[in-house]
Amino acid sequence: MKRLEPSLLAADLYRLPAQMEAAERGGAAAWHLDIMDGHFVPNLSFGPHVCEGIRKHTALPVTAHLMVERPSRFIRPFLDAGAGAVLLHAETEPERLPELLRSVRDAGAEPGVVLRPKTPPETVLPYLPAIGRVLLMSVEPGYGGQALLPESFGRIRALRRLIERENPAVLLALDGGVTPENAPALLEAGVDVFVAGSSVFGAPDIETRCREFCGVLRHEP
Ligand code: DX5
Ligand code: ZN
Image (cartoon, rainbow, N blue to C red):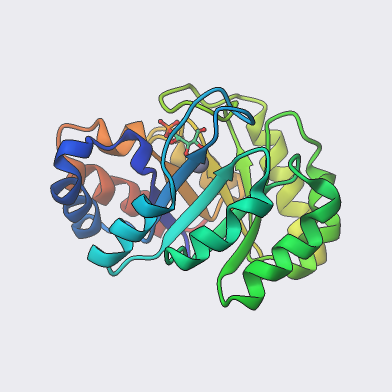
């Protein structure tokens, strides 16, 4: 099943409940929460208490995308804050990654591996048997509102092939510059989970925009 995962980085925090309700009515499947530490990426965003606050008021699961230099410090706080999936960059603490992914799974949450745009797709190979999803960045992480890098299409196809070969149960998620305009081509290339920030929360009508996205995603290639 293909899914839309709106990224709350682009939401208007003053209107957050209304914007989340609109996205949920429009068919959003989960909330994407970008965690930035000002080191791994040059920006700051949300901490575990934000995850906890959101979890209290929504039925949809929260995905924590950890863009931090030391994810080992933050996994437990986000699990305790109710994150349903914790996604770790392959570039951070690589020697500890197998153990960290296992700790997410042992806690009953979904572990995932994230690749920056220049990290080779094959980097995920050792982790595929033990994760629920791969998240491919289609922009340099750190900021919302950037255009999707065109080379992402080749990378999606390469990852799709690796997933089909090694563990077809793994979902392929894409993050950065996803819009209703490029969604059909991304779907065709093999994306399962569509993370979208500005194209959802920057829309004049969030519910209608999510319906538009979900309409595209229903047409599996
Ligand atoms: C970027 C974040 C994304 C971001 C996507 O570092 O990981 O989740 O919110 O935003 P858009 O959809 O605006 O590119
Ligand atoms: Zn993200």
